[in-house]
Length: 116
Length: 115
Image (tube, rainbow over all chains, first blue to last red; front, side, top):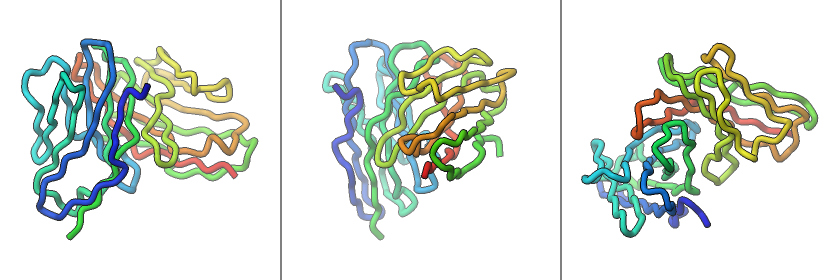
């Protein structure tokens, strides 16, 4: 079974509107971390936001927020007030366990296109 | 620029040749990771170093692949006898162990094309 599933291969959003990118995950470990990365066409993976499995509140970082629903095992990324520069691939990733050396497992990504 | 750097950014080689990539992590980051990303997919873990010790290797890392991190600073990833299936983006990431919120920061990647 896929550990990280991103069901939207591509999404369009109008500039200045909000958009939600979906991510569901699968783990039996009670301790895990969830990450979102942005990958522009240049290729570099840019860290956006982190949510820990024991965090009581949803994470927020500027225009990015994470809608964490633990019972549903979903960690959707919400981007508010979309900008043209937000057009990129977005990847959801998970690290299982509290061993800080554990690798990240990535989903297949969602391509976001912001329309002017 | 104090981010993760990788060299070269692009590499074209013929099947059967050896290639070597370099990664310079963020200064003082003790952990270094290599990932591989094929077209249209998310990155897949290859291997991980803590300081100079290689602590984990994926089954994706065949015996044609070798990685080193001498002195716990920069790292190299070598692919021997390249195959067309090795064509991919090779991403390096580094982190500073800070418990459960440890964040991996990625470099720009090396795009490999094997002809």
